[in-house]
Image 1 (cartoon, helix red, strand yellow):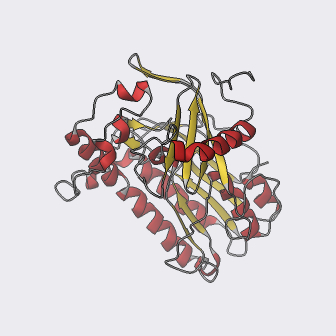
Image 2: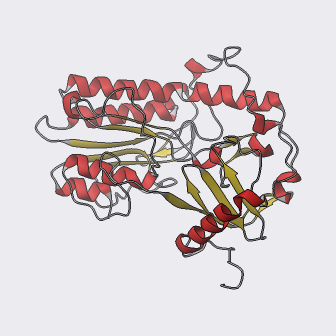
Image 3: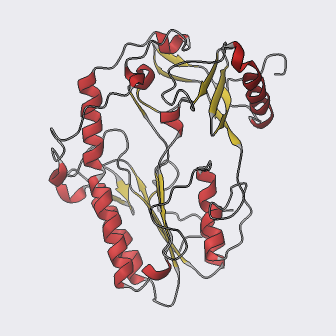
Length: 342
């Protein structure tokens, strides 16, 4: 049950160029793809289409993937609709820009200084309290390198746009542009990590364009998840797909969703227990296997500076979100259990 199978059954030519899951070292194509060019690796020294790439400037992975994506668009018969899943590695950890972009943002970005970098973490769980604040120069360096590494992605998206214009497809093409996860860059003393329920790890930007269907420069304020991508595409294409996600262009809305994660050891001094939680438009709640709980109210605290889990005015909210997490975080992730239930 994948979007590729659903669209292929509807007559689409389907193509994937780039990451599939967390990498695909095999040349075997999963069902549903007319063109499957899976990628395994990073910015350099990666496997793609059965070939090992090196460290030459021409091997920069975003550019190699871009060229294959353009070939897919231009080789599709004009009378056949197409679906392209373009998934470059950038700007993943390592943040390596293309040689032509290295240093492009040096001295041009404002220093990244949200209040969560210097907050008092006394109400955070002990594994957060044990961490030291990250040096500001490291945070700003990572922000600059990430910005530089995504410049090649911007160029690739623009090139794909131009190829769609050249082939007469722009009048009826839906674009969805998003990242697979967020990342903390020093917030709550966590640097370059994502496996936590905090907002900067779980909230990602998404842009959509569909001329004649989506009003330009509008904002979708409802809760959207990555599981909504497939049903949104299927509905736009007139395909049928059985999925728990929602068509973001339809009328259905969700009130919240579960948050969960297995326990993980980043380094000997930084072990995070497994957690279950629940997120709404206003609140994030998380309970860890250790018993620690966190609750944040984004209406008054968008940077998650004040844990409300032990504040009396929030007792009802805490109980409600805990009940929702108990119901929807099922099965629980490895390493987690609810007291008295598991």
